[in-house]
Every structure is written in structure tokens, then in C-alpha cells.
Image (cartoon, rainbow, N blue to C red; front, side, top):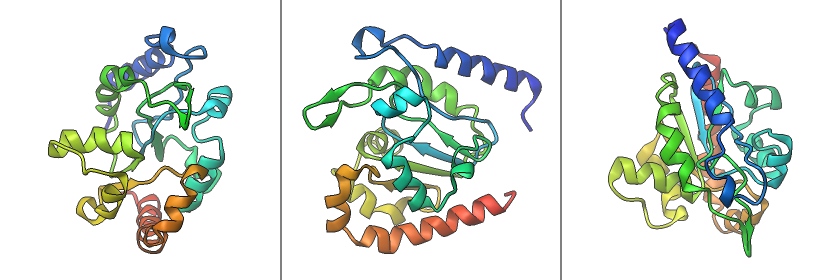
Length: 205
């Protein structure tokens, strides 16, 4: 059980992170860290970084990528945005800007400054979804010393990490071609992932 001191410390940390301006000089817009956390959450979504639309609303995955992700996970809008059940912590907390082929990579300062401290309070996490190459590289280099070479190889190796960690491609419409070329993902991974999530959310364990 989390005691009151831990809760107060976590609340203070979240307040500090939400008002972070560490990368202000490198961002195209004003800093606006976007994440969703509560110490009781059992599912962690480790994503990439907010896009411009999410920056504007301040709501994680409030875009077409989020629509597809909720469909993959078979989660209602209400459950997905319940921080007591689902934690959402991107590798970069603010919109990094746009490059020639899409959004720029997450700012590295976020993970090095805040990630470990925030995750230390999420003691009930039983399933971590690693969305995209940046999240996968971060986690796999720390756990195994190096990342699998490509995102496709990471996702194809999902059974190696099951049932506690599941690497996923980014649900962005930009990945429609990847999904078309890799039908096994929707046929093999998604049904089992949906089942695991449903069991977790229906259980107190």
C-alpha cells in the first residue's frame, strides 16, 4: 500500500514535471508536458512524444494514432483515459517539432531527467507497451544491453518479452504500409494482447 508521504511526494513530482521548461530553448512551441499517471495503474504505455494536436489539447493520443491504438487494445475512451488503470508516459513529454518526414525525435532530456523518478512510483505496473523504435531502444538497451536492430524485428520478437512487455509499432497512419506488409501483427499479436488486457482490467491481481 502507498502511504501518504509517498503520495504527497508523487504529487509534488508530477507538479514539477508538468511545469518543466528544461528544453524551452529547443522547442518550436512553449513547453507543455503531456502524460497521464497514477500510482495504481497496472498498464504502462511508453510512447514516443506528443504531436502538434496533442500539444494543443494536452490530452495524450488525442489524434488518429490514439483512435487506432484504442482499437488495437480494445479499450473504450473512458478506460483508456482513466489514470488509475492506464499510465501514459512518452519518451519525450513535449511536442519536439516537425521535420521533413514527420515529427522530430523525442527530446532526450525528458527521459534522462524525469523517467526513472516517475516510474519509481508506478509499483503496480504489470504490462508495459513499448510503442515505436525510441521507446523500444530505451528499454531494451537498459534490459539487454542493446536493442534489436529494427522495429520490425523488435515486434516480431514479442513472444520473447511476453507477457510483461509488448513491443508495438506506432499506430500512426504513416505506418499503414508497415501494417499491410506485416499482417501477422494484427493476426497474431493483437488478439492475445486484447485478451491479456481484458483479463488484467477485470482482475484485482
